[in-house]
Image 1 (tube, one colour):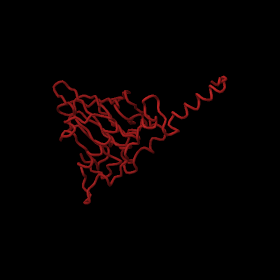
Image 2 (cartoon, rainbow, N blue to C red):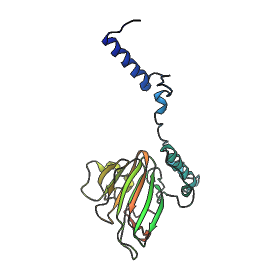
Image 3 (cartoon, helix red, strand yellow):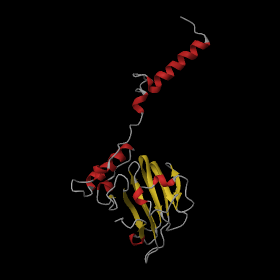
Image 4 (spheres, rainbow, N blue to C red):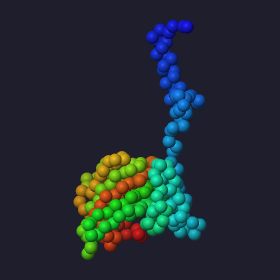
Length: 232
């Protein structure tokens, strides 16, 4: 049997590493398939026309299907409540759903004990319009915190503007939006409002995002949007 010197042994090991990195087809590690098979596929990208019918009306059925595809991409369980009417989607009357829109479900909204559990679903690059939650006859100004479960988000709140943040704001919204302090959140990281009721908005990352919201009671009567053209 041929004996290998130290330089030859290192060369053989390096070659095996390259082969098993997915650069060469057919590599196996024991009973494992080629490393390339474990790479996650790119998420599906959507166009605005994917969410509207021929007459221009918002197609909720097709829209929910897009979110189910995103959930499958993230291996997120699609439980029965997500298949019913509690799971909603909105384009906020702006007609630009791929750019400005969201889906969500209120898992719990308890007035008596003043707590709220919400999950927010954003497709790749999708934004929620800037908004806040004022005090109402039933509840105080809403306090919120958010944690991505899958994907990543940028959250924007009132404060010192982050340099370059205007590039994130759709042209049609620039006259209205004032929340320009930008923060990136990854899965497991938590961000919150500095002040209850402050204006804020959110944008999904390149894979989209599924985000847990922890908050005080949500009273729809206190919801306000910066853009007067928003309908919800």
